[in-house]
Image (cartoon, rainbow, N blue to C red; front, side, top):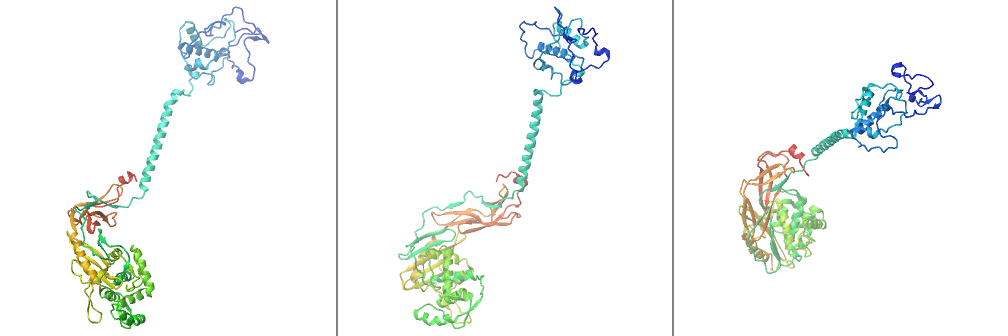
Length: 559
């Protein structure tokens, strides 16, 4: 080190004095090139400091060293060591490079003060070793002393595994949250209601052959219908025509809908009105069919309905209307409302008895009405009677339906007026393949002096319709024909309690289905629903226990 002001240099490592750090003492650093305020020129032909890195002299072209070669790293380390202790200060974390691989990039050489080679301060053994090694021409990585420990900041290539691990953890947590959410959502969702489903190979059966040709009447109109199967055929034009006493079917249906009767029940009673008794002479004069009511006479609902349907009593029809609705007009309104509810679009009622020719309908509409009425026990029992027997004695009177008991006929209603001609509606039951089948028909506007013309036209028609019916067994008794489906992949099979027999006629396709309300839980052998095959009804029983959907099915549901 050059002498300044004739003073000897003080080595902080041997003098015991604390070195002054110009960065912290607030003093201006004293450069070795000055003394007494005057710059000392460098000695002539001064050799480079022994600790300075070897390199080209000024003016010479510097060789290109690879960025991360061992030589570049050694040179960068030597420069860093030379800069580390110019004033004997301690190396701190902020002074040192990041790591050896960054020396050639992050450290730029500083201009070192030119000093006399004999006057530089004593160097640390480690620096001496590095300088000698470099001057000897071989490269060596410096040995870091304890004060130059590497920074804890990891380089980018060391941070990559950590980022990957953090990403994996986040992914797993998100996946776990999603799984828990899906499971919870599936469990809180309400389970679907169970439903019936057919398990037969086909849900229909088609009968081979051509449709039957029925003996239709030459005049008027007619329709034949098989309950559960549909219309077998019809003839004539569907033009509304006077119904005559066939209108009393609607009168009875309206009364029983308002005041239903159980099988065999007599029902409530009513008294003949003075108005009804006063109208009796006029009705006799017109030749109406009458019972001949008496003043203050008492009738039960059942007996009044029998008089209405068996002997076609007009006087009783009006008394029933007034008892039910208070007046003829109010009751007629009920009749027309009932007709609309049954889909009788070509029907209009103007009186309870049908004597008025303005009460009109068609054969097809009357079949719709008869089908609904035959489901009422009191109506079916009344039209099946061959005689009317008055309460309290009296002479029995025969029914107008002379086909009762023939060709399977179990009920009907006749009607006749001069304007209406002969009308007749009928119901017949036939056993076909062990299944009971209901045949319904109507013949209207037949040119005859009485209702017998319509009955005569209906007799071959009902016989031919019954003979045209055929049957086929699609499943034996005890076979699995359906199942209860819980909507989630579970359920229980259903067995037929008897053979599944389909009834129809040639050329007809019959649909099969299951009717009823499926249970949610039931033991093996419990009744559950009914198999429908046209008009046939087959009870079904569970072939295994039926329970709630399993936890697995609830978790795996898709809908």
